[in-house]
Length: 401
Image (tube, rainbow, N blue to C red; front, top):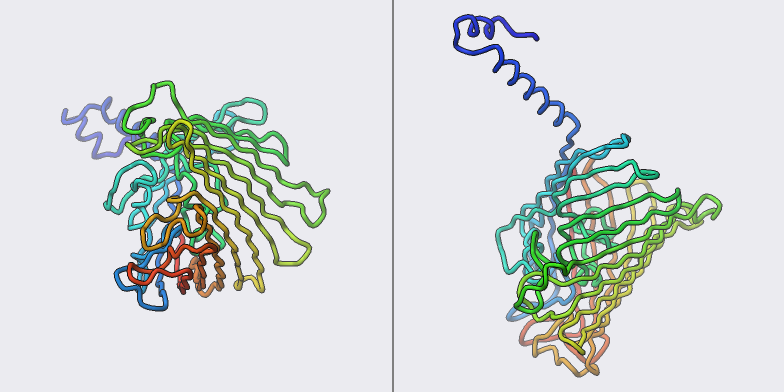
């Protein structure tokens, strides 16, 4: 035991006991040891978005998530994200944690009725909060216990991790997070699998499954699984390309019209090419909502991605995106002329993003996006001027730390 002279003097005077000092120092040492491997990271995400033309009475942009009508023609703070993490190490009984905290308007997406949490404008969300564990099973079985990101989708919440600033139509169909347990296992160098069980497929943190406005049986849970294939060196220029398959099935939390389980299926791939600096990707999302027994709503999206790096700092990303859904999937306002197109919604978009790194740790990019209705509906624009086309210009600046 090592104590400084001041501590020994206090102990001699009877002010403190050496036993309590030792316990306090041991507790402090344990805390410092636990924190020594914790990392802090995050980002600040901002933008300026302009939609040419005047939309009297407001503008509608179906399928847009973080660049909707309320972000047009001005400057925006999207999110400030802080991540505290102690990742798993190589030990057989490794343990860690991750906590994602999001501040700003984009955080409210986790609280909206899309996710069963009810309307909320608190500008704060716990995006992830889980304990990470590894058990010595085979090559090592990794577990997440708590709240974790959904396992499906080509794009993620973090804008700077996506090829484009705006999100695809498919992103708006997918769940965002789950409260439960997720297990992942690295089978070989080219195959990884994952599976989990959660309270709900869509829903708020700790939310329980609901059938309409009534709680479901406590045994009703959501289930998910995924498979990842990484092409080996023997595939030549395609080596390192990734193919991903995933599904999520379950009820939502919060009162809604959904009576039966929602099934979300996803297939995606990113392929390297023989052309230096060029990669291509593809994503398919399909969602089936059980509104009631003998009645379902169906929607699917298909997206293609092209990335070309001219230099280490200059990159061009292009995404072509198609959405097809039952009435009410992406829009339902009367000015759209719903039903003119034959009872289904057909949307097409193209997002062209130029990414140029000017400063260290900063993402600077400009994007032009065009949205188009492929049927007779007019879902784009304001109340008094519904349109079939919308054009958007955006500048996105993100500092990552």
